[in-house]
Image (cartoon, rainbow, N blue to C red; front, top):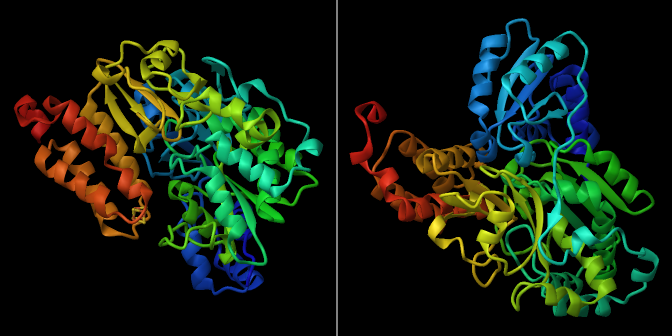
Length: 522
Ligand code: SF4
């Protein structure tokens, strides 16, 4: 078995040196890892941050997520066109600058946001962007902005109330003690799937095998989500302690943290927190689908991030074919709290089916965006009021792949018994917004991020995007959405039409031909 966890790192290093992946570098990397050049080419061409073409000297990556769309990113595209004469996907003839619109930079509470090379800039307006471009081109590299989190809690906090617990006392707990505490706590996965964590860990502990792995999914790419960025920045010790307790519980000796490439400031923090532990940091290369757990495992193994067919599930056969626990950052961060403060305390913070609290990333049309820790069971209206978004006409709950909840349902409770918060993105939508335009932005995102492996998702997202843009028949959109949800291979395609189907039901007038002007129809 070839352990290929460093293939992405080697590709990125080669690209940084030559501003492209040259045939010579590709041949050398393929030989070093004992794989064919065609296999490596398949990997290199999958990720948006890698490429064989010569890159411009500076790349501006404007965030095109739904949150930055609401914050006014389109105006900035015009500014760049006016300043540099380039549009999305183009490079200046002298090779100085290139412009890309990317899916999400994880700075949703302080958009519009952009990265210039590997530096994040937030709260952009025309003047700030122009001066950043001017300084960058003259070599006076402006320092990156700090992403704003404005963290606060509604009710008793769990994660926000803790620094790192004393690991030396926790790590002596037996496997059974840890698993029993998890079962009693009601902890469920915080990445969106909400699978009971204790049950998952038991499956891994009991699976036959001589080697096991723990993987932390820090590929937070859901548009509107930035709470894992906050957690890793402020509470990385909790996440690492959660991984070590997972290793103790299932008998694993090695772990990996898969971090999205767009969070460069976290690398040093993670390396500091993992020093002395058998945990390796793997940095992605730009692919939303790698947030899907089996695609993420493929990516760590140095392949294209294409989701695997399941079963087998990762607890039975995961990384390198070995039993693997793969969990979201927030899930892992909760574990040391449960083990140190007790399952009963944790379960008591939430509802019977949803133990604990949830970190919510609030952005969009909110006067006070930020990361809010809320006990499960809180009403959506309470979160929106806290964020200064009580007058919204709708809210996207769970990000691009989540539900679009109209105002009439704002009293629903955020918990697995009622309205699942998914990965925790809450994007309020103000009353002057076009719901159809919003849903079209979401579908464009999924069209771009579809890995293309199955046709309901590959063709469905493109067709739905096109129909939304030209005011297509709502009945066709409905049937297309239902087909994608029922027959796509992985969670990306299955959840891509969720908000569209909600919008067709709650805002039918926005999809009606009668409301179109002749101009809209053409
Ligand atoms: Fe790929 Fe989409 Fe199919 Fe998932 S649903 S396997 S992302 S094409």
